[in-house]
Length: 304
Image (tube, rainbow, N blue to C red):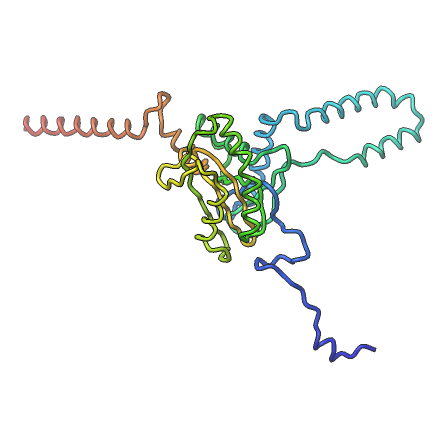
């Protein structure tokens, strides 16, 4: 019989990460995806908006994804309706059971629990590229002024995620950056120089020092990429959330209002069809009316 005193002396211990997740389980947040800030208390509604938005944008950018399967399913259903009448009852039942057991089409987007107010993470599965997904939507908002969401504020795409420590982050950058650099060489040539800036956003994390992180990421940049904090062309986005780090590299980040759809929609609404600012024109109209009113009052005073 086991001595209870030995059980008390050697209690069964469980190890947890600093954010409370167990070490033996898979991290809740993993892989490429999009960090989204939203209105406090509207996280669930924001997730619903994001599902609809991302599926719509993905259907335009990656139209072949799932289209063939849908066509096959429709054809199978049509053929089944024509042939079912000729099959015995047992065969029809077996066919229906096989259709039920058929795996459904894999979801391209999934909500990952953050358990944090105002913060949502939507993971993306291939062939969806989070950076292209977000930039496509942001450019549409900039053109039309329609955000297509009610509670969402800002998007931050990440091309990959890892545990928040310097060796893992360096390895992630070495995997994420090369495709971007290769595309820039293809577009502009190998001799072109670029100005870049590292943008770091930290939530519920205090393990990795900011200076050490910047130095480690800078080591992954080619020699023709020069640091410029005031007029950067390329931006390295780093999201630190609890024990998770996400990394991506984008262009025109400041010109697109840091991917803040509300800001972009408001700017567009403040502009006329010809690009002039309505607010400024409205101010001028008010000034003209005030001047006319002063003249009327002055004429009245002169008459009196």
